[in-house]
Length: 126
Image (cartoon, rainbow, N blue to C red; front, side):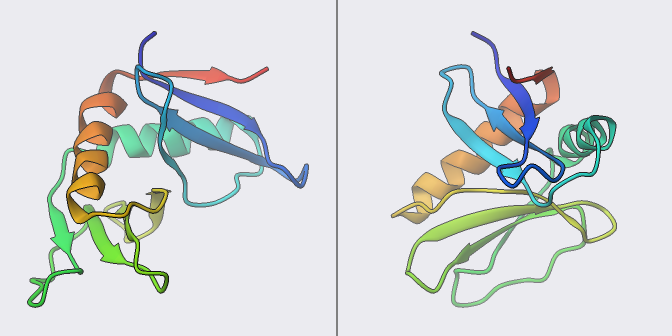
């Protein structure tokens, strides 16, 4: 199975969301918002594809250099887990991760998005 963006109806039934799944089927990133239509959700997936080959701003480090957009932001959440978000050139959050127990796992997630998104098919889930 190849990597893919899966588009599906939002759980609340109001709009659409996507998950980026790696070739092994694991979700490696989700959209940063709910989209009003399937077409706009597809555009969101395309934005991830276009912006994923960027640098990482490590906000979990003691000293963090602020980088320009587009960029991944790696950070530690209130629960102590590491997460990342991908921001487009306009600063909008276009993809987010799950929580990871280690920074290295979150970095691996970022690398996986970078490898998977550029060639991922966009499909509508059934």
